[in-house]
Length: 554
Image (cartoon, rainbow, N blue to C red; front, side, top):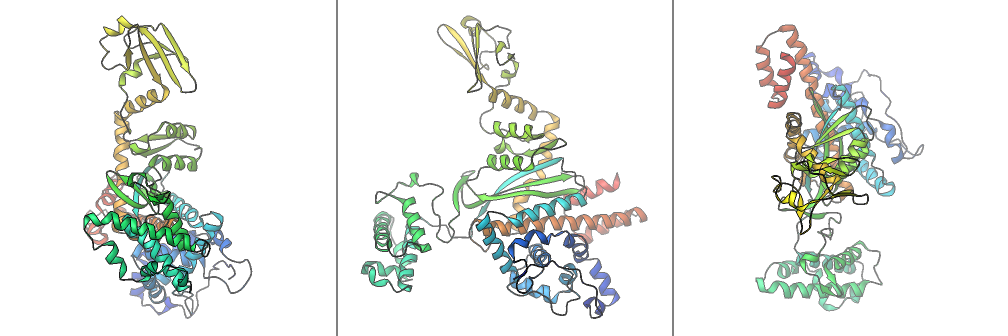
């Protein structure tokens, strides 16, 4: 299939818009389709995806901007692929939003979205390049400029994303891996190589009898028996089906669950171990005392008086920590020409992240600090050229040394002076038989400084500003169903997550356009009753409405 850009077509006499009455056209132009077709659609960069197709071979591709635009609208309207095809072909709003009204035959089929996603999937596997993520982030930046959001204040939050695969216990996991490989051998005509005792794993009804119908004291014997069968089928098939995916999954499972032919204790099993054969990328993590199987995501919003837009995001296995996401975000943002404030929660607070942010002209503000807070009194020590020259009580140390490797300062004080000091209980001093020793690290001092900043009104305001992004995990779960995405694997889930981020930003841009349109009416009419009408008609959420009132009334 050859790559072609979507050349803008002239309106034909047979254009579907010509069949609309004046009233129907007026309603259409007041809908979301008008803004999407006029503003969002032209922003999509088709050239970005030329690598997915041949340069000049075969029939031309379905226009890239039509495919991407339609899938974003699908997420916006919460439609399935099947419903999307019907909508594009039959709904004038979709055709108006995707400039398709002049086509005699709509260039869209039931395989159009899935074929495009498949091309993106294989391209990323082969090259490691996520074209869709790059385009969604570029599109988000363009929307932020339209909404006049400067990007000087950013807020960040992470969330867990559940895999749609079933949560399996050890017994069911081992049984499923054995059963899948046995079925594959039977299907390929190699069943004669298997011992008779293994053929029962090809029987669908056998799984319930083995994995579920048992007393508590029967679990371990059955687990050991199924593990022995797993080792047996592995040895039998090792020389025959080394390239089969089911064999590779069985091999990985045995590496995770056994050692020297025996089951590992549960506490020795890695969180990176295979959770379900149908989703090999999913990992296990406990967060807030709750177990999660699947992935994690990190979102960064640019916020301002006119709203907020998700301009950066990441998606990875759920073992990827918040601090790692934060560090990668800072590196991705790079050196900023103007100072930027990045507001995050306490899990992102690390000395490495603060240093990386300062290097890039970014002020990393965390709403809390993880771990125990250092005593405030450490800031009262007098330090000169990496040496402690005086304590908070004014005592001069007998000796002070600097450890460059560990970035720590150590000072010896008179034992008697420290023993009678009024700050003894809060001071990090250790009193020995002959002397008193204070050890301070640069990391501890920096944490104390940050903890002190958090108590100021300026940083409390930053913390309140971050509250807006705290609602995004709920929105993504309730409206965009990220915990039930009908795909498996990191790359595929990340792809669907990207389209959902795009849909969120497009929706915010459309709401912003409606508010601006109403603002122009309000400034002309000066009629306060219109505000009530606007509230009832557009059903805007409370925070958007309050922001709108703030802009209007000032």
